[in-house]
Image (cartoon, rainbow, N blue to C red; front, side):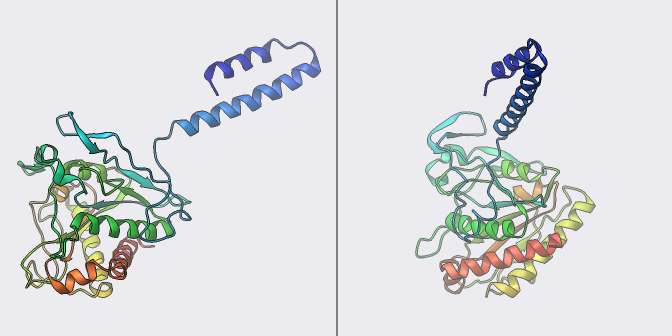
Length: 312
């Protein structure tokens, strides 16, 4: 309904004559004003909402989440022809709950658009890095970006079912980006309880197991660093007990690997952790990563760790 319609009703209400007509006109004005208010509230929202019902099937994309075909913009503001938008999407539980950012690393069309992903960005601590990288893959060709996306969808469904609101850094697996610093800034919203980056590693095939990264500095201050560590420990323990993977045999210590070279962690001002869920070049790890049941075990573990951290 248009604003003109609302205004016209108000004028009609003031110009009525007679008690009966006044009563009916007043009721019409009130009903019309209520409809206008409802219409404005509905059309003003830009968030795509998913309910627990529509997100009840782990591993499937929530039906109400729509992918945009609008070309994405590089960090300089120029459009790249044919590159799909990677606008983040929020999935809401039926009742208000904590908000979690899931960041599935990389994207399906990153490799096709080096002019976007190679642009330098602020990576924190005075460093610059490329906007995005393409990720790794298994020896059989299963790409990391697809693994990350599939696991994130499964985690999202499980979290929403437990009353958690979820913000995704990308709405599909056939777009470009967004850049790592943009992903981090999305997670820095004051209402974000935790941000979790979902990745897999690509190392020598002899190495196996997962590791969890937290920032070795304190970009969000001591209090946030403490919460990030609690989040990291919760995810570490859940991955160890629930995925069928061991802790990394080739990197870090006992499955922990503090770093200061990951943009998403360096720029985080909210509790954040970064998961490397197995080595895609290792036959044992890749067997878990490439199977639907293996990815479901991984997602269940990740969701359990997040829910433990949130106290739900």
